Every structure is written in structure tokens, then in C-alpha cells.
Figure 1: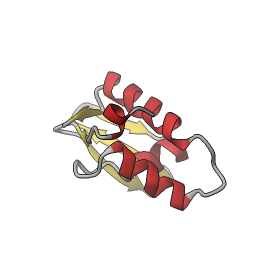
Figure 2: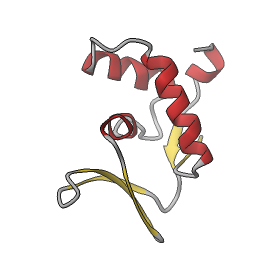
Figure 3: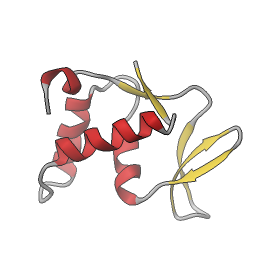
Figure 4: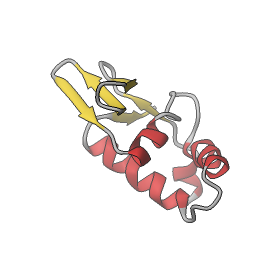
Length: 92
């Protein structure tokens, strides 16, 4: 991961809310027009997206939580880029 990408700070877009949904038994993104069910990986990443932490801190936090996983930096950055394209998050 390059230094420029590592220092970027993602945040949920206005109108989106991240939460655990017991009925769905998964994390979801709620927005005025609907809901997105998230898989475990997406939920773990978005749980760290608070508009304060940059990508490097998010990856470091996930590496502590999942020490047996490798190449988390690239996977997290790929997910965040996809989430931006889906208009779930934005770079602050």
C-alpha cells in the first residue's frame, strides 16, 4: 500500500448508518432508500470506519484482530475503493 493511500481517511456518506442487525444476523448499512447486508469481512472493515482513522490505522487494527490473515492492507484498500464507487463511503 502506498503512503498516499495509507493516509486517506474514509467516512460513511451522509445518510448512511452502519449497525449490527440482529434479525439479519449481520452488519448492515442503512440509508434512506434501503439497506445493504454486509458479509463478515465488509462488516469488520466498516466497523473501523469512523471518519477519524486513516487506512493505515484501520489496517493495523484489523491485523491485531486477525493475526493469521495476510495481505490485509491490499484487501482493505480494495474494499474501501469499491465502497467509494458504491457511494457507501467517501474520502474525507
